[in-house]
Length: 327
Image (cartoon, rainbow, N blue to C red; front, top):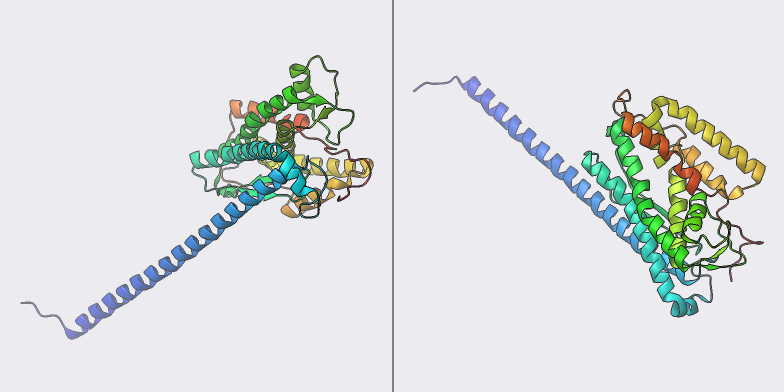
């Protein structure tokens, strides 16, 4: 039997003890990180559920009151409207949530296919009963995406949303009745669809709102806003995928043009959005593999998608006679 010197045995024991201690500490650190991540995911999931339920309630309320400029909780006739027009509110709620869900599902599925981490959507309720919602957003680690991946993820959302919004708007046109006045202006896409579905009506015919028509209108507005080629909006992602660092010039030109238009037209309702975009950062953040070529098909689709905000966005979505009041 071979004998080992005592000092070697002590060294071996010390090394083994150090290794065991390191493994225990590493295991404890991993446990803490896992617990922290689990707690974060749990809190995020609860917030997403609460926001989803709140958005369902606010869109339902918006439909029941007939998309009036009133605030939930400050409108005395709300319960009467619910009892009389609950079906209208339910149809509007389901339709709007379907459009928003399709939009965010497009982003999420594309991100999942490209193995880019993304969260489930955060729906944004709006207690003002004009629309009942500000849309929805998802979180994504965009810095891990290359140009092709960024393009696919960004464009998938608006296209998926339009696939749902256009048929719903067409149904609304079939059911629509002419009206003398309306506080909702229509985008170019809506005007074209009106000419196709109701060719017997004159161009620019004012329509009385219904649940399907207003859901499609909200879908157009949300899509048009998201496809503006600036910052981290969907349009900003597509623009960066198309032009790389040159997208900064496009974004700054769009921002300057928007600010000039606001000053000239007095459209002060867009000032808050300009401020938010400015704080978010006008320029698109860097992504992985900036020099990767986008390819012909994606380039053609991307250039074509730049038309989407032109035909769906409304500079003056609301034409309110006089002041907004709470009744």
